[in-house]
Length: 170
Ligand SMILES: Cc1cc2nc3c(=O)[nH]c(=O)nc-3n(C[C@H](O)[C@H](O)[C@H](O)COP(=O)(O)O)c2cc1C
Image (cartoon, rainbow, N blue to C red):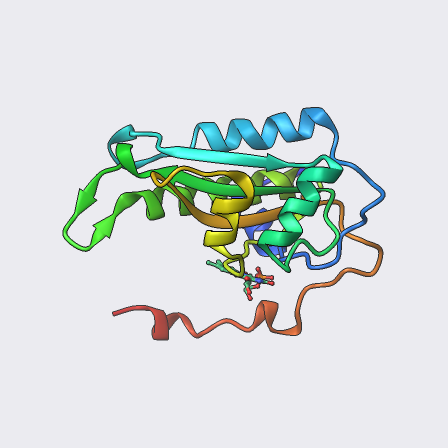
């Protein structure tokens, strides 16, 4: 897929909730998504992101224990941060913001590569901790299945239901 502008890509992307489980993600595409993850901006450039790649049969079974939202994807990421290396303000750990930017980078890079994804908050962080043996300082923020969309996969009908610009401006 080739885009002439960011806005074109951003408008076309939608959350894919039906993947083709028989079509693996090529290693070079996985590498490109990880590069997008690596170069994401983070508060004070602390780069606290820690990402678990789940793609073997055993890892995908672990993914299904953690979330009901793999949607048949042959690849999933658990995007976490290391809380021992984040910027903190009263009531706020920038690790959550950092991981949100990281996940957005990964999601948009995937789309440019012809791959779908779906950002999922619906995962069990405690389960992730026990299943993957994550230490206390590693905090999961997002679960992101990635893969080729199954034939017929379509955006949710509300995908293009946007609030009016005036409603979004203060
Ligand atoms: C922070 C966040 C959490 C989300 N959690 C889920 C989820 O748990 N399960 C799911 O199927 N989609 C989830 N989504 C996808 C949203 O429902 C989707 O992005 C939104 O409806 C807009 O649709 P679009 O992505 O197709 O434009 C999440 C998206 C975001 C940004």
